[in-house]
Length: 162
Image (cartoon, rainbow, N blue to C red; front, side, top):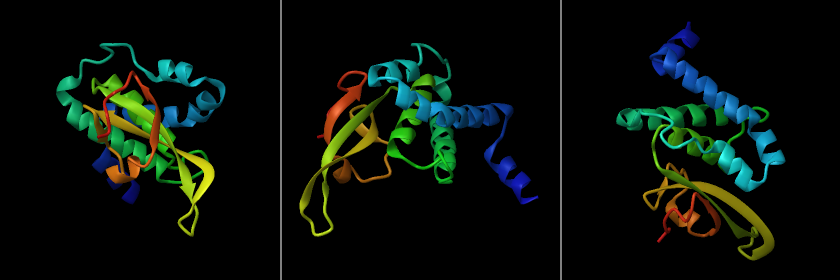
């Protein structure tokens, strides 16, 4: 009974269920795409054709659903459905652009900090979205993002972090 209540409260139409299943499917195949495609090939595959959707009037509602469904799946932490910034950013990038929201995906690196505060010579990476030149739908504070050196932003520069 609780499951049906939860489904009813999160899915208001067949389109919502279909969106959830599409997000789930993309998250499922992402490890294969990431392992077998170069970054430019991956970005071409995940970037919808211009004008792919005429749903711009409902973009706020769709943005909220895309973020909610993506986070719900990735927050389960089961097998390949773990919350990793790369997966989250790639899924959000694909679906938000599909629904007419002009986002850019950025990748950056920084040196890891040791537990004693020293900087190690080991790199760690992060992925995030930009919208109108601002960090978008990021769970980490902007100050945290600014510690990464942006190495790649698609498409184009996408704006500055300052």
